[in-house]
Length: 469
Ligand code: C2O
Ligand code: CU
Image (cartoon, rainbow, N blue to C red; front, side, top):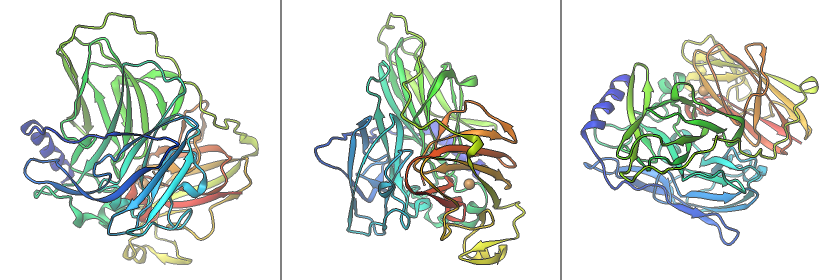
């Protein structure tokens, strides 16, 4: 089914050309006044035939691009014009806890007609995003998200700095979002809710005008509910400079110019434009044995810039506490269970041991350490400054994009083998059968979620929390 629809997209992509789709506009984050995020029903001009109703911030998806300098105070006012409550979570920002946007944990959900003021400093430069964290499996899928860029004090010299937001949408023959499938237990217990149409910056026919000889920074963000995107760059050799906002210590070329990016993750690339004026090169989504272009570099006819591009250098480090002490770490085993083709027979839910079939009736299919959904008590409570090590074992038949709030972590062990010098991330893909240990210094006080960023998985049980005191 899903394969067929993806193929249908391949066919439609070549058949239809859409012009004039709105792209994200920039709003400066200043100390002067808040950026207003109007959450409201809206629609996208995805198709010429009919508008597609969505829910968006500021009438567009992605929502307003928020841009700040490292160390700035960002102020944003959520104005809820939706028919249900919502919140805004600032994904990847090492934020003060009461601004983290988690309903029931760090704030009350903002009701229809109400407002909520967010104000927080952004300690780390890099590429981040914001999204609804209330009924996010539905609200994010309807378009409630946007990008937050935090600029380095001296950004690396590039000719263009471009945002590249990947999403997939499940759209029916009537050009409307397939709302009937929200809450589908089949999706929840398998790979999550995958779309049949892919967009970049909310467009089906996205392209980037580039000049021969230019250097471009490309900020790739995966905002899809559950799709792990695999991208292939044709005739270009992108260099990775940052993952989830955090600079890599030595920039490296993408192997085979292929990029895998899980829901919630970001990858910053430097791409040198080495083709000739007038050339074009697709960027394609690879899906099983097929691929479909989702964007392209379109070279202008302007003559090639003649100058030597220097080697790509590492970005300056962000002020993370890197002082992980594995010998004294608080180790927290985390057994991930459940889902289709899994072995889970029962788990604790709302304080009671329940059989799998009862859990399914409640819409619950995943457990961590035998516990389904957000427990009353934290998974662990640690004093500030403790090194925490989550020893995650994925005993399910599905990959999970595990996301930690308020901190960035390092993978220190994979399948029992120590890993040295892994990049700092806030979201890591755990493959079926894999064990992955993530460590970090718990230096940010408050209550923080740890959950799968496949949003159907987190709502159906794969979500817990920890506390730093
Ligand atoms: Cu981007 Cu708890 O999520
Ligand atoms: Cu998952």
